[in-house]
Image (cartoon, rainbow, N blue to C red; front, top):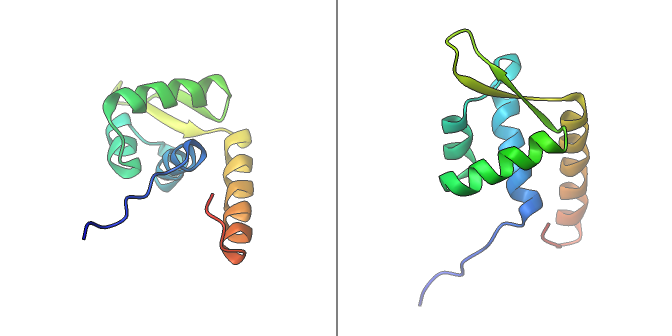
Length: 97
């Protein structure tokens, strides 16, 4: 018997990406780090990064080595904090987010 395949909601994927960025601290995270941590294809990564920047949840910056890095905005930190709160409430009631 095959294992049950679980799919992540778009909100969970975006939160996973933002957690990857947050995990790198003030330096931010590069696309490769986010891709591996959030377990995404390159196409999806690009699409979601653009969306997060557009919604002003993350910001694109250049590092000292001139590579792209993403950092959380204040709005992004606030969203992630609230998402974690909703996650906890949902788990307490046995509801998947």
